[in-house]
Length: 476
Image (tube, rainbow, N blue to C red; front, side, top):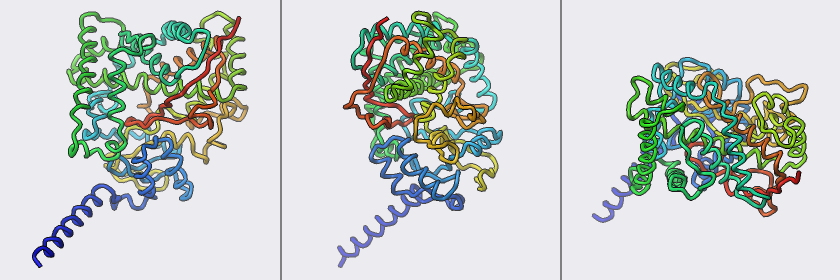
């Protein structure tokens, strides 16, 4: 009898714990229940199966929103509930509202511990103005086309007469060198030396912090701490700090020098800003460059048309310069369409408002995290005709207009400050490649269906992986 009572007590305690966990983790807050809630089971299943964010958006979030005829939904992620904005008009309302601020990161996640919170992504008010002035100073008037061209020539020596190459890997290495040389004042030599310690440690750390189970349930870091991962993160941060010390003794015309010379900066701001710049400065552009080259591989007619345009402007030998790109409308359209199809970032950092917002017919309570779902906006069938089709003509036809629908860099006054840097890097490298090579996608590619497969990312990035491309040098 006594053992029976103990069993009942254990069962009651277990049920109480489960109910508590459900209420804390999975139950939508009462003040959000007037907004359509994306069903929870497919969201959790998507996280646990390691699906990338773009797949989750297209398989679960967008179909639900269409069925409800809404541009605002509530989504469970990272152990909490968020309002997602899926319509570009509502997105502009949100991102241009001065009452919103960025939500501080959940430091249970190792990823946010790695980036820190003392950087341009999270600081507000005067602190944000201080950080943005550093970014503007390092990027203003500094469109390093010469650097991009030099990296393009190094790339040609690597590709030689052609062959099959892992383009997703090369994209990361060349964009890392671009941001290193042109912005950070440090040459990582990643393109020529992929085996370097810095590159290898960074890859391992990003794989570690992107484990789906730990991303879906950040509190697991408390229950099952990963001390080995923390140690690798600390080792990587120490390499960044070595670059900082190097720049203190050898200042230049670069972001880190401007950072050091800005009054009032703390050591934490130095550390977090360098780490964040390193990541944001090359991962997003690498994803965009991988996507563009893939779509050219999958659509050879578009590739040929873009090549003809490039050759008509540059001829067989000239390197591009900024005025040349205005004469390449089709290449520009292909870049825009590839970034619409596989936007470098899928969602923005959550925002919170100090007052109730009224957007899309819903009252969004103060203090609730709100996300601009960039990928959903760029694939919303209410905005884009046949959004799943790669069609660069949509950006050059007589009827095409740009009224803010295209927002791969976010929207509002705090969209990506390196937008121009990234776009000119894409334009330069792609037009140089088009002049020198033809390429296609291998039949055995995991992307052979025409739909890019992205790696699961803790930073909500679209990063194609195992993307092999067959290059053939053009005989002149």
